[in-house]
Length: 384
Ligand SMILES: Cc1cc2nc3c(=O)[nH]c(=O)nc-3n(C[C@H](O)[C@H](O)[C@H](O)COP(=O)(O)OP(=O)(O)OC[C@H]3O[C@@H](n4cnc5c(N)ncnc54)[C@H](O)[C@@H]3O)c2cc1C
Image (cartoon, rainbow, N blue to C red; front, side):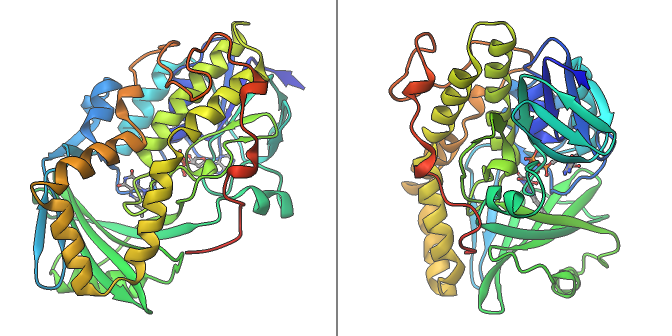
């Protein structure tokens, strides 16, 4: 069995972010070539790409988010967002990592071992970043490990142009549906998502594109994304991104948290490689770091539940409040802090770690200082 200093399962946002902070012999495994398999609309706060020095992949900068309800369009200048080229992002970030790439399907991972369709591998440190399915063994163990709350989205690209990230609030089967049009230079990404995981959305997407005379769906991509934190430490692995339910509820913004928590996990993993930290202490610190953001997630999670069923008129009132002169600065600050882009760096930055309550200084942080896992959402228990 081949051995490495660390193995990262999943070569998208969370996995590449973690690998970008790790040195030594790192194996990065993905079932697809790096940059293939885009599932998202690839929009995120511009500050993320600024801090990671990845501005070359930006397609368009957006100063405003516009929320369209039946009778009103609310403009919100949170902080600048951008749409970016997924392939370019992944390839550029991968080039910086120095990791060895293996194209294989991970069939199980944990406790220092990774099983794949191309053989088994071992490493003291493993990062699970394979998305909502997680790298846990198949069957019941895998289902138990998954975040309980999953949204579903689908989108297509259309030759159109515009400015701003536009959301259209609608309804289907008694639940909220969010449609979007995100301009990205020479095209727009247009799609829709449900909070309930309902996935038969193709006809609705076609209707939406027809209504705004944007085009035919053609090729679509998408899938599930998680939106409730689960314990980010499983079987002695750092779990990042959708594998730990880190996608933000309400907005479905999952790239930023996958990058932020991915880099935090990568920095701690590298401390283990350097012998500066024991693995249990590093895992405990990571758990504490994610947990220190759990309150923001909880608030968004409750809000998502309410927004899913809120009558249209009240939704409009909510949008006006968030976009108001008084509401916007507060909402912006809080929303930023749930997964702050300030924690992102261009290269390895071992000391850039969030303070953890009860273990503010990294030195002296021990495994025994960790909180237990019982406070996390129990996986696979509820849907909305
Ligand atoms: C339609 C849609 C639009 C979205 N738009 C946005 C958006 O604009 N902005 C935003 O912030 N978020 C968006 N999201 C959410 C966002 O895509 C996810 O939260 C984010 O991709 C999570 O990143 P990740 O690295 O954790 O997982 P993923 O991006 O899912 O990456 C997982 C990686 O692991 C690989 N993999 C999976 N299983 C295995 C296996 N068994 N073996 C080996 N490799 C494996 C995959 O090939 C992939 O490369 C959207 C989601 C959808 C569905």
